[in-house]
Image (cartoon, rainbow, N blue to C red; front, side):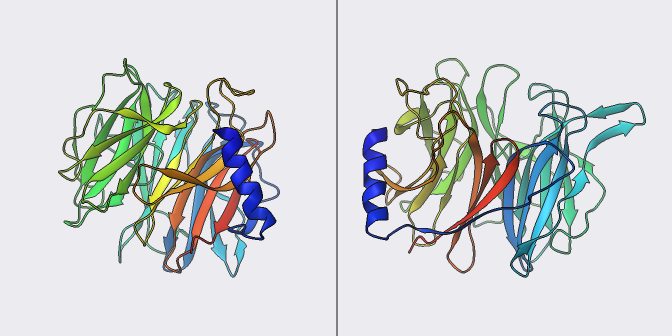
Length: 337
């Protein structure tokens, strides 16, 4: 399957049909050596990106950094959140998620704590497109906010946050808020973490009215489930046709109803199976079932290109950010027309 995807893309490139409009680093130099887990959102003032950066993942000096696209250039990264609790106690931060509330604030969700099995949820708000931020707000116990990938706004104004836990196996659940993160409800886990180990879901809107999730897993394939009641209940998880080498993915429903997925196309039995996070691929589906190869963003052997985030902006272009070798955050723009 991997060879077929690559052959199709080579054919497209030969015909001059590459969908990649631009590819750039958000920064060249930064006051931290390592970074990961980027996120992005569109505000009235443009694109905002965030990620965690520090000495290395799990180190106490890891904070949340933000950069804004201004006049076609990314602003110098600024640390806007960290896990400092006292002069002698500081915890690492994790997995920021940005979401622009329509006509209101930009919310930055993030996690603080020693590890994914013990962290807790936090958020900050910006009312000026990410230039300044409010004081940190701790989420209620047991509420994490969106765990890696962006929430979706339902037609009734509910913000549906795809989330997961790692304290009793890898399990997916959902959290909802109708007042921009002031009050919360949550579902039970939709899996037991044994037969299928899943985290970090992305939410898609199907043409038949159902919601669909795509999840990272330890089961060699991306996993999916469906909901017919706006995320209150879900079908059992099952594998789709695309592989997953235990690496984060992200997906978005395009304005024309197609689904777009960013993931590492590394299958069991491939040369670099076993946690490899290269290549980094884009696939598109008309129905959420059959996925067609669309682009290869990176394809350097034994390197890490991971944890993508993807949105479609008001002009119809698709923006993707991802971890580049744990050293930088890369930003790619695609034409999906």
